[in-house]
Image 1 (tube, one colour):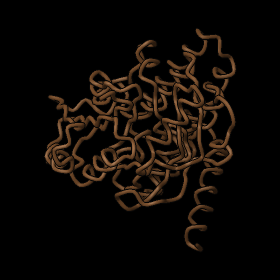
Image 2 (cartoon, rainbow, N blue to C red; image 1 turned 45 degrees about the vertical axis):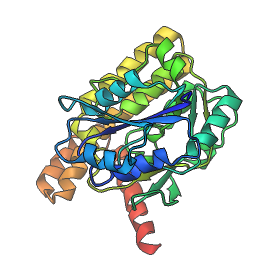
Image 3 (spheres, one colour; image 1 turned 180 degrees about the vertical axis):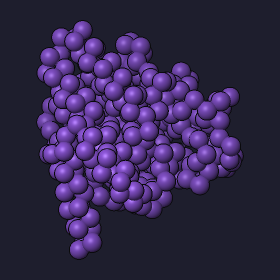
Length: 316
């Protein structure tokens, strides 16, 4: 059987959620696929739960990492073993709608795309339950190819789930291999955005659809929540790396947007430290950090936006 799509699931201590992810991948209307779970040195029963959920389906396999290398290293192991014409990353606590891969494959082939991205449906319940689309409708309805500059303009620290870095596009295997593109194993945050931007800078054709066929499970204990503040040097170094690639490729518009993004990162990191002190009710530390911020205006704007969002949730 020809394999059209390889679904790669990097999983570390995801026993509570991984069964839904595995079943959503194997229950696709597209049957010509493989599902590869990469056990990133989990200390719980992630692999056993996943194998039980697969119910002996021969399209499912498990790869095990000897040590916890993070999502980038785990996904790269999956890429090395993937046999499909297309790659579909899936986080271990997220799910696909049943027709996602078949629908995306048709769109990708019709547009001659290298990357085809759908919107993200955000839910607080495991398993696929239609939620609220996260990415801006105006962006996801764009006709034609998305440029690198347009893409980076939609990813800024503090955007949360509205950032395009949360996308999980269908990716053409031949393009990734021809350009020798994999996830940067040094990155434990922002690795998706970094890979997509490298693809775009090196000529990938990205198309989008407003359909939300990927469900993101919103969890307060998610490893991605607040991780930027714990690894600021990674964000800055990765952005500088993309700036260098944009310069070498002669993509001046993307370079301009990447430099704007770096400025936002440099403002946002100390702001998060300030907000952390506020949440811990450390008034003196919060005051000190506020006065050391590179931009008080930026901080006040962010606080006002957060207050408005909270007010809207309270009244809804």
